[in-house]
Length: 523
Image (cartoon, rainbow, N blue to C red; front, side):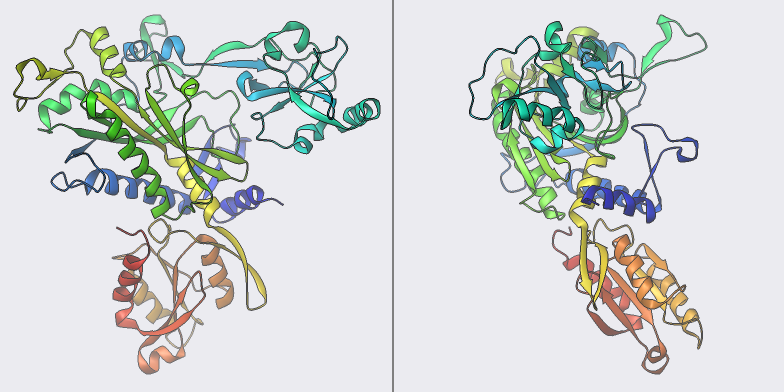
């Protein structure tokens, strides 16, 4: 069983993540967060909000910032006037190329289905022969090994090896758009070639209707991103929040995309949550602010426990940039299924505000009354956008935290979550259910839960209770035992090291506060 299978199993077993509407067979691309999962995700969002928005001090610019700046928040509606999506380009251009397999009934994004041919090892690349068989595999060129790609076609590959000798894979560009090549392409899981359809555009927005009538006049969309709500409220914020330039607006909220091929657990789903900032600055300072936010966002993940060996900051090449962006970098994480994006940080120039200004007819330029040059007092800001996925962050922290080690000759599974993110901070146990231990343990539990998310458990052997909390990611356990009645001390156990210490019961709350505050990265 690989890491991803183990993690999915643990998430179901311990109440982190369940398949949505599971008793009815589920719904592809949708997931429910259980009692522990909802706490983990809330802690991630709270950490983001506190670090990026609420605790920001505009009079004390962080190290590396070009100057002081303010941060405010919004919570915008999921349903918006559909003209918003016309102005942003989503209605006309928010499309993915889609292909279907007529044999297996599977659907794929054409740009994520790579077509390969087998050529003799060391041989020259030649035009594809008229009878040559091609293989389609989901993924990206160079990111999936040959054995994995060809495993579904083992028998056919072996027959080709007898004919060609040692072989190597060679990608065939634009094969799905070429009718002759597509007819000779074997789709994943298909028995015969030629089952893939012609690629066609597929708009990713969910369409709905507002009001009693279902016609074109009542069409609306579930938002595919939270950013546009910030852009259309830019003037409202400037008029009411008394923000001084430059400043950022942050938002956490749900977004929806009708993904062609949801996959990799919660990584790519149809309903997800974003944590986005739109940072408004002068055009001439945009490059400096872009570098600041790019580096700050990467450091945030490191601070909360993602290892720099698995975390990457990748700058986009020029041909990767969206048409509206002058720079973009991805914060990527090495998931068990490959290196994939956690967050994008982009310099979106003035594209969004300009589009909404031109479409709405409203003047969205910022007025800087402190500018001595009258000709420069009104200008359209540039925007730096750090856009993170709360669900992807939760999955990355779970992947990083999952560990199997040996304690006392037994293998245990433990989630080494950063204490700031751990769903439960402390669990309280009576050693046995007699001699007044449950009463003392419950009293301590009730005291602790006023300051920490605490859990009480008196069922099963103490070792088994420790293991359950290790799997839940709880950083500390407190046990009330026979000695507690004698000297008022309890056992404080630390999750990662399994170290146990005797501490006075009345000092547990203060000791936990110190332990949690001293954990690396805790603000």
